[in-house]
Length: 300
Image 1 (cartoon, rainbow, N blue to C red):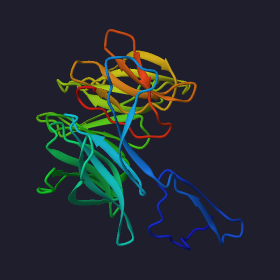
Image 2 (image 1 turned 60 degrees about the vertical axis):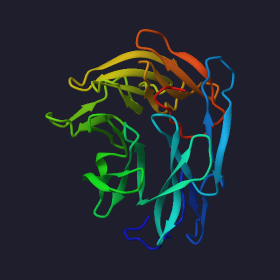
Image 3 (image 1 turned 180 degrees about the horizontal axis):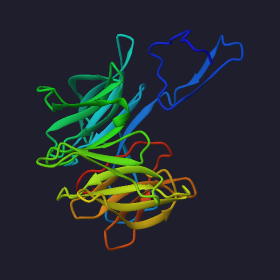
Image 4 (image 1 turned 120 degrees about the vertical axis):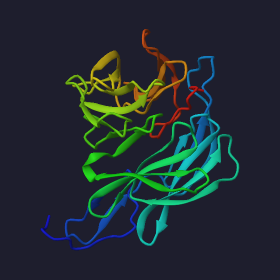
């Protein structure tokens, strides 16, 4: 550890990988994750199965992330791309069942998060810019009309979740608080997680925009908690707790229930479904040990 920067490796893709430096400081050893990323779809049928079947859509030799549209008919892709030595992500659209990609004329450097707008008409993304700032952007799915929604300090958010009324939920890197901004006629608020939630894994708005579904870890980090946050009061209400870890994205779907992903004690990721007045139901095991998941609004 030295007070000044000595060497910069530009364009080295680390992803979720690891790295180490030799004792003499002359060699860098790094592992950047898998050399191939596969995008798949899973149809969640009414008949329970032990392992949910996945249908491969495409693969890439660069890091690839996807978000299924609210209607479930398209997938928004963010693919790592070289751009003048900087770390950038190129956006494109593909039909749920595959086919040709439609590339959007938008590339975001230092991409932190990206989502569909609630109506599926626009793409929204959060990325880092100069001066230790981040900004939230949106563009039409045609690639036209790109505009800046808001600009923040770098510590303000690493993830965001749009609400149907134009408001936005922000979650900083510590994952111990949720900020709600840009609500019409209401002030911006930040709600801290209660003591019984040590880490927020994901959030999703209700259809009436009054509540957020929250999935997170308990204080001892050996169980996953599902809760509801009242946006106006900041009150968290616990709905259930399940043995497991690594709580992933949660989705409040059209029938009023919630779907979420967690890693079960035996190590597999599984999809669960939960209604507000009923215990969680295990839908099935997902065929991946390291993946990024999203769910369509109908839960199918």
